[in-house]
Length: 151
Image (cartoon, rainbow, N blue to C red; front, side, top):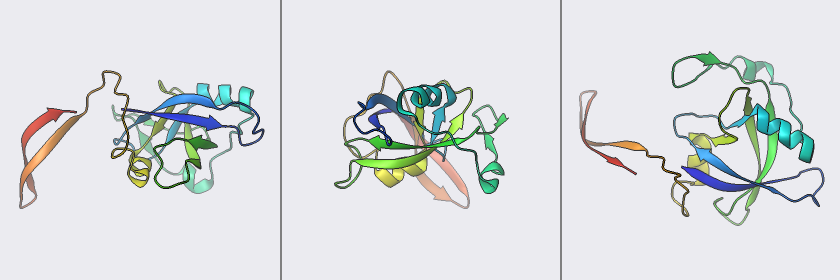
């Protein structure tokens, strides 16, 4: 699923915002941005790429194929969307930079849950399906999936 966002320039507020569709992905905890998109934002909005701290560098990340990879840095972006809870519709968010990403921006499960992105507004699904297993019973550490549906 995708969420419409606007990236607002933190340095020069007279620059127009950049519209983008962020992917919502509950399969990852962290928020990510592609290196190519960071480079574009550095040229248009003077966004700063910063190095990871010592603790951040020690965290291991794996893609859905189980292959280990590391973020190349991080950026703080001023994100605007009507989907944020409450009256504040513009927030600063930190994203890890993925060097070979096939997306522009991806929000992970912590951001999705903290901001209620699944419960508000209309989503752009772009033909994407999400397989959800519905549990009908839990017993002694076992689970049985009774039905599946495409959302």
